[in-house]
Amino acid sequence: MALLKSIIKSDSFEKVFYEEKERLFQYASYRMSEIADAEDAVHDLFLALTAKKPMLGNVDNMRSYMFRSLINLCNERIRAKNPTVSMTDFPELDIQELSPTNFDEEFQIINRLLEHLPPEQNETIRLRLYAGLTFDEIARTTQVNTSTAKARFRYGIEKLRDGLKKQNLL
Amino acid sequence: MTSNNNQSDAELQKVVDILKPKFPRQPREKVTYPRPTYRINKPFLKIGGIAAMVCVCASMAFGLLFSVRSNAVPASQIVEQSIAEMSNADSYRIEFDYRGRISSDDEIYRSAPDAEMVSGTLYILNHEGAPLTRIDWNDAQHNSAIWNGKKYIHLQNGKVVKTKPAKPLDELYKLLSFKTIPNGILKDAVIEESDGIINATLKTKSSGPKHILGNAQFSRANKRLENVSVIYHDGVKDLEVIIADSIIYGIPLPIEMFMLGQ
Image (cartoon, chains in turn yellow, blue):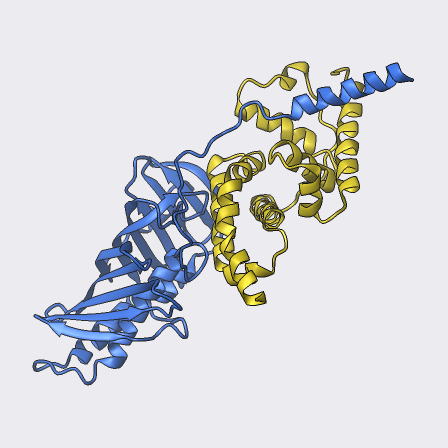
């Protein structure tokens, strides 16, 4: 019976992937500046899951596992291109930058703001706003409790608010 | 207090509105992920892996041809001579067709089972002990990737679009000169000769119907490896992964073709 359950579970990864691929792509799209890199990251995720298919039966929550794997894949790709990544000071901005007119401008401002935050707050905001996950889903993906996920989101937004207020941009 | 809370929440909402996606992108092409695909390595099949298949087919043909009945010169000797020449060459020029999609990889194209075939030419020159490598893709942007021992250069239409420090790409050179042969790949080899053509076919290990089939073809008359193909069988149909039908070695290659952009 346990073997049958694990087989059923492992067969469902494709189903979950198809259900989530839009959210997965949007998450990757706002992590990677080049669309080819975003596509590759999602593609690599699919391949990685395929390669691990026999072991996926042991995964409790496939959805969270997928997002967690995608986060790691994106981080690897970014680190490969930019080995030294650290938090930055709050960026100097002008009011026009806060009203982007296309994706590239939007991508720039989002990443300039989020780079200012601790990684866990940065990640929580991305999962909430770009992957569209609920706080429960974020909690499972980042392996914390829901309260912590909500707190990280709030603290991150508050920090950005404080920075924007200092520059009279809010 | 309530007013302050309201103002604070409004400010927080403004920040969220700034961060919310307004210009979400869509994938450039519809990717269907038809079914899980079997791959030797991730990604689907790197160029190095393909070169490994070439060498394994050739070396397997050499190792297993002793019993093949042939004309005056045994087929094994033909293959032995071909391999010896190829391994001692200081330069290679291979024209190939490759199933891949453009990517951010240094090779520019990455293998993908649901992609179209793209043709290219691989050049390798052994220069003062270090291999210089160049891949010219026959695509609309005339993409080229060069590893010249000190730098990696990406050209488009002859212009440098990216360059960075990089060590020589010696993986391909070592494989084409038979300096490294992957272990454990040889299995179920089938050798046949017909009308002066020696075919060495190699099938990878697989747990189901999916497998990869490599074929190396030698010409008795020319005593050379003539072409190589790698085909992926997904359980239903065959999918050409790479075909190299022009394999030339020992030709003069100008060093300048690896130094562009410097």
